[in-house]
Length: 430
Ligand code: NSS
Image (cartoon, rainbow, N blue to C red; front, side):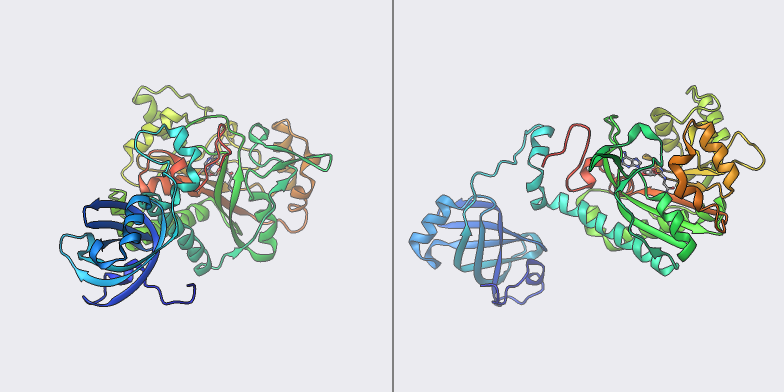
């Protein structure tokens, strides 16, 4: 069986009427109407209608199939291609031979199930065309990102998952028992990428980050995929230009190559206008205050404020120069206003933050000072400080959440839709 020539559903739509074909897949739907049975056969490339006529098949087998072959049963069919303007895609297959590989039990996913029950059945989701469409877009996002980095001279680095020092502060660290010692799951590969620039200058990684974030929002996961990049001899301005190019490239590629999938999701999205907006934190809080949202200088932008900003912008926008109070210790202070940092978040319309980036402190003493000001212990960051001891250079980088980006592009309402097996404070199964 494995060596026979099987056609794929998508190929059948390009074949002439009368062509003999053999296909394998699953029953997406089955309707019995007396002596005729219609099976929607699904494979990895699509769904096609297969018509079984009682008179064309072994009668016993026909009876067995119509009685037992439920949705999701796996099967091999042989038949001939027929043009049928009423069938989806304009073709169907008139079947003359069926072999059931495995009958399915009653398929548990159906209308009316609670979200929690549906999430328990996540391992069955791959069979759904809508889910497939989201994951295909996700794949294109990852491919496009890697492509852009390679075309622009970035070297791919793989960083560890077990780490010992917090990048983004201790509050959201997952602690693990590492042979009797304390270790954590990484929140960001940034520090490792900072080490790598001394050999490769421009580096990136695409790997999971972990946050023990209890907030149950539509945009937080406890395990998310993180695209991160770091550049030597680079400023804050340089890194936001990289972010703009990269995000534009990814979105454009999805729009050009995933039309069908965007259609399935009922999503219309245009290539973003350029240049992206650049709004200072100070202007952003002024704007928010005018809209009645009380944020005072030094506070982070709240979820509500983020939503408001995301509604106003007509294209992606960098919110720039966040105050030190809202950022981790490693951010370079603003040369003209010491209260601020050379950092930016990229906001996208109707969604909010998808990246965070900025220039790093490359001076050893200033970095130690900032670590102490944050009530951290410089000795926990020995190797990170070493990077400032041996030929330090100005450098900058950013992190982009894959699921946040896919959520924006696909327009789905919850971040869990963008990843095969979502991890949240209340879910580690399946
Ligand atoms: O915490 S970040 O804002 N920044 C960093 O981790 C930097 N150390 C990255 C860097 O400069 N190399 O996270 C970056 C992005 C953020 O903008 C989101 O898009 C995404 O990572 N992110 C998340 N996505 C999903 N769920 C959660 N919990 C989450 N946290 C951050």
